[in-house]
Image 1 (cartoon, rainbow, N blue to C red):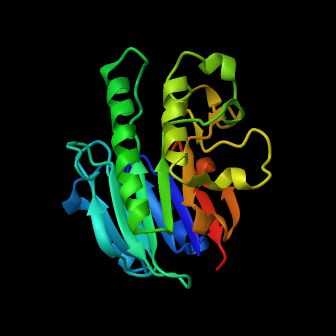
Image 2: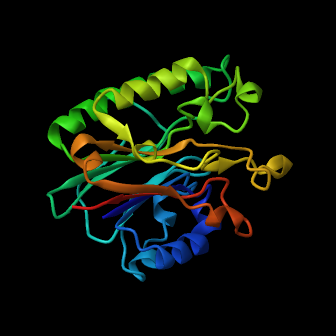
Length: 259
């Protein structure tokens, strides 16, 4: 079973690239972030035509998440329970697997903008709400995968130039602590279960030839509960799509589960 996550930074713009990638990489589930379209504009038929089911929640211009899957999902949940948020950032569904149901959660976590911004305060509050909700999800679904753009680089090894980023969002101690609190629920960063090449990133700024210089961050993650960690046999970053014409600034991350 292969699970993937990809912030596409506008599904309208990147739809042909997503379809091409799925044809070449027929993963069992793909979480998409930053759809940037309303629910009625979601291109469901395009995914149906290549054999994928879809659940989504979107909004105009900003945010929006979706899960594409080879098998239809059940018990679809949108947003974080008991947390009021007008921004569409979370969707979850339950998919079948040889080991039993797998709960797949797709998240687009807040950026935070700057440490002195109210958006940074919102980001930390949002992560607290996510942690509390995921705790309840884990109690219901022992096989849990949380895919998404977390907008947090867990450690300095996930940053191309830690000194340059010091004092900014994505790397601040409170943000990293918020991610550690999620992991402390009993989740593992699938990418770090395996030896990886140095300077492995999932996001590169469009400016200053960021991708060409590999001046990136690893902020897109797949977190797995213990039963899924035990069967995870690989986790990779596919840098290929970042080299496309008009690419997203993010690229897919894929985890392989062998039951």
